[in-house]
Amino acid sequence: MAGDGLCDVEAVRTLVEEGPGAIEQLIEWGTAFDREGSRLLFAREGAHSRNRVLHAHGDSTGREIVRTLRQHARSLEGITFQSFAAVTDLLMHDGEVAGVCAFDEMTRSFVLIQARAVLLATGGLGRVFENTTNPDVATGDGVAAAYRAGAVISDIEFVQFHPTALFIPSAPRFLLSEALRGEGAYLRNASGERFMERYHPMQELAPRDVVSRSIVMELRATGDSSVFLDLTHLPPGFVRERFPRIYETCLSYSIDLETTPAPVRPAAHYAMGGVKTDLFGRTSIPRLYAAGEVACTGVHGANRLASNSLLEGVVFGERGGRAMCSLNDRCRPDTFEPPEMPCPAISERDIRAIAWNACGVLRNGPELSAAYTRLQSRSFHPLLQPDRAHFELRNIHQVASLISLAALAREESRGGHYRTDFPCKSSIFEKHSLIAPPHPGNHAKVSFA
Image 1 (tube, helix red, strand yellow):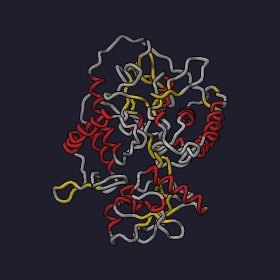
Image 2 (cartoon, rainbow, N blue to C red; image 1 turned 180 degrees about the horizontal axis):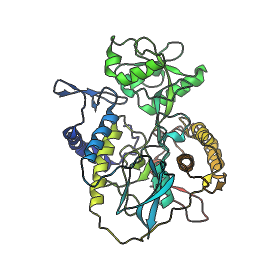
Image 3 (cartoon, one colour; image 1 turned 135 degrees about the vertical axis):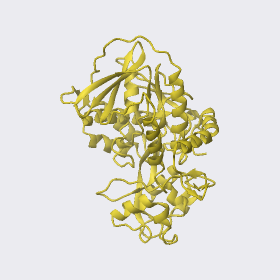
Image 4 (cartoon, helix red, strand yellow; image 1 turned 60 degrees about the vertical axis):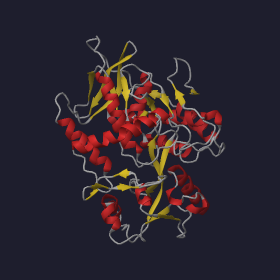
């Protein structure tokens, strides 16, 4: 299975049993999944044995779910939105979370928000890497803030690299969905050869980690800068109708997917690890919860099965919200002071290059060790002029350090983590990695349980 031996059975059972009800709730709230008449349409993605994925507007499923949830939330009393504000740190009192410290970009000031409980839903960490399909805001903020507050981070070494990101040097690494291969797209090298049969019997529909490694190995063998995703053999009009957003985006770069293969290569896409939670979103810190990509529920194990992330966020987000509602309030100090926020003396570009080169698709011990040492050796300077870039740099540095440390400790290859110096799995490491913030004067360490 995609999780490669590390999926938590109870977490998977919870997802499977409660998933249908969560989807029905989304439909009731107005989510417009694609249909043929009254029948819901299902698609297939990599490593799937049958069509099982709902989609919306062809290739905009996440956007449609967010639209629905935001619209529903706006209809409820007691919910407010604060745009152009970013959480920088958690407020703590007597070992419990007491709220958050946020930075308001409009007023360039800090806002301290006290709360009975906090749920982190900050998304991914792809911008830690030089090449990523994630938006610019995916800087691992929740993982970094939780770790600084004392939360346990689990399985952070397991990063999924999507095999088919559009590779145009001057353009963002736009995601060319796995559903393209599910609908019959081929991968070809620069010579026009379909090469995946040399690497896996499922060819283009092999798990994402296999396809990503295969592409990297093919590029190393040929010396080319990219391989090509070919849909030109599909019926005329199919790509334009089934994947309208992908088609139009590629067309804006002068690539007509119905007549021209698209240059692609892997890019960081999804973090299987994150802030360790239980089945109700509870972290190791009282009154702190997490859901979605920032959390490590155990559902994905070592390598997420395509399409499960949206469902995980909906199911465990609801469970976490319900658990938070059961908490009693408690007395807190009247005021808090913003925590200290030193900034690492290293550029974001350097951090992202270090992460990509050492913690990317193919890893090895010496490069991981050098990367961690280089990141830890950097000095810090005090915050002089607060801005979002400062906070994101601090978080990227923190998360890159955690990934390199955990990847160095896991001396095997499993799921999204591949070590060229330890290419096989080991029963010794059929466990989850755990990183707890160190005591003052000590270095962070990785344990396995």
